[in-house]
Image 1 (tube, rainbow, N blue to C red):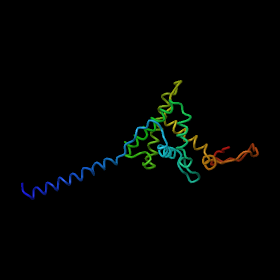
Image 2: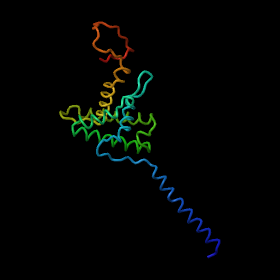
Image 3: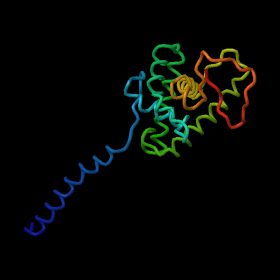
Image 4: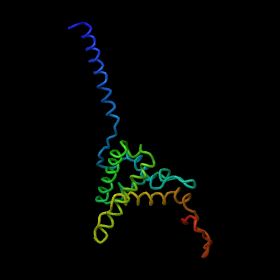
Amino acid sequence: MLRKTFINRMALGSGGTLLLPAAGLLQGCEYRPTLRTALTDADIPLLDELGNTIIPDTASSPGARAAKIGEYMLLMYEDCMPQEEQTIFLDGINELDSRAAKTFSCSFVQADPSQKLKLLEVVQDEALTYNLKRENEEESKPHYFDLLKGLTISGYFSSEIGMTQARNYLPLPGKFEACMPYDRDDKPWAT
């Protein structure tokens, strides 16, 4: 073999050994969802994003993330949900995360707000269809999106932010007024 050919082949071979690990690193950047066996504190950012997509920030009040909705959902999941609903909720969170990975090639947390909203709109439509099919059943299991949305709404509107900034707040005791002026654009009262 000629010296020149040998050097060319060595250069190509060493270049390949440099490029192969780099290709592996690029594949390592692809998001792969983890299969959760239980919700933990590590899932709070995901739950916050889900809640904030359902109740986003507005000009007049902060969204669900500001009310620490992820911590609320985790507490309700651990302490108040029956085992069957825990399983449904957990499977739903896993499904949402894997759908985001397939659709957007990233986690739900890293997706754009418009992508998050589109995904949750699709899941809400699926939940409506699911509920319509099981409307006449006596013991129907809830859809995971109904659990997610219910936790978000109850957690947000029972928080200080939801009570005092998203609604008109009238602390009690106060005087009783049977007739009060009310406009269509007024927020509902919280007491």
